[in-house]
Image: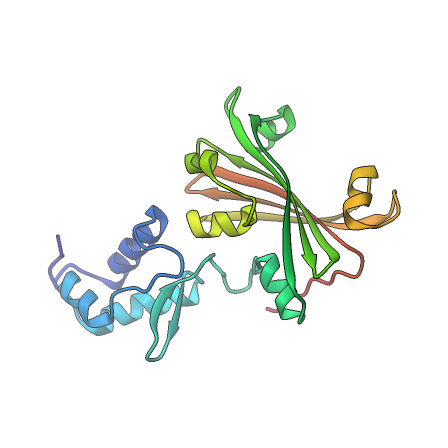
Length: 234
């Protein structure tokens, strides 16, 4: 039920909006009701609504455009933190032609190292997806990803033949926390074949773990072909 104007604060509205985003009631890329409608719902002024939405935009949950409305961002883009791009966007931003190819996708029991890393219960099942991302016919990134079925049960019916797991997750489920690590690793025989580099070649590698309200969602390793550059601004 809407709260009265005496008790509704911008913090109350922020909490409700975040709850609707995280529960999936307001999906990524969907438009929010306009400020006037939200003001009526919460029995408050448009100024109060505006402050709540403005702060959520500053915190990276929403995008606000004049005359275009306010929409939910596909992934939180917190200020002063690294933005997680989709590979498709990276390739196309370079003027390239993005191409995706599934290598394998299977349901399996989480290996011990993954269970320890994500604090998973014993015999927890995960969807293990391996795929390639290309710039035209040139290898761009090899992705090795595990998705926790207890957190994302719909992954068991997902079809990754045409869409990568990262894009699918962005469309399906938001996240509340992310951990990023960057390192250099050496290409083994399999990775060397996928990225078209000599075996033993140092490869720029990213590791990413995401959670939704404390529950582990996914762990991924991304291996990039030679020449990859990562840039961020603060």
